[in-house]
Image 1 (spheres, helix red, strand yellow):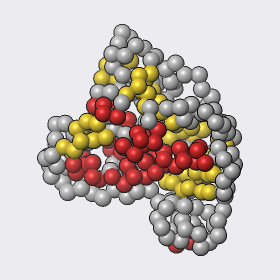
Image 2 (spheres, rainbow, N blue to C red):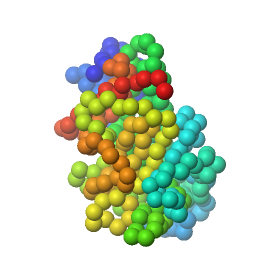
Image 3 (cartoon, helix red, strand yellow):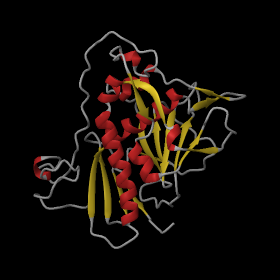
Image 4 (cartoon, helix red, strand yellow):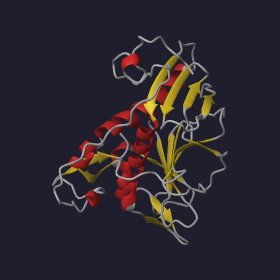
Length: 293
């Protein structure tokens, strides 16, 4: 782990000293997850808002970017595997103009704005550290809350499903799929993750990842679960998996074992992304071997 002096600015980018923010007296870091403010109960359920089950919708829809525009600009090419009507197993490139839909009311969209900010910062940092690791650089540390990253990926997956861009496989075809209310409750912090579910990274501790251009998004299946059981998001060949139910397989993938809730991702051992979780959990550390594309 990369450690700075006590007066360094906090690596969570709050702009205040680490010693008064996320660093404890023992020198360890813990970033508090985003807290969700209770929305006023309106009793209104907008028929086109995917969070209508919560019963506190506003009357107007927002134009929801399924992936924040800042991420699309940074990574560019988004590939989706699991489009209804697409050839089985194929990954289809989707342009930015197709990645916006009115699937969330303004009140719920506003409530998730800080999750968007933290998720965007996480994936922008992944790309920035990858680029910086190609050249000699000073050591650097970026700090994130693991639960915030989990919920950001969950938000993207729900939005894609609600817009009709992700579906599930039946015996004969792939059909559109609407996430159950449990997914929405998880997203807004009103339900707990099932044991063993949440964010994982493919590969054992210390795995050296190869790079690939583009970002891949696809639904995941599980035995005994109708529809989508989880999501896979792979920026630059780093495979993040979000298990919402017990995930057992990825269609067409040949990947190493899952490492549950990673704690550290280091780029050439000099640039580190730290994810903090609830105390007492195991910490899996990864080294990313960055080479020119």
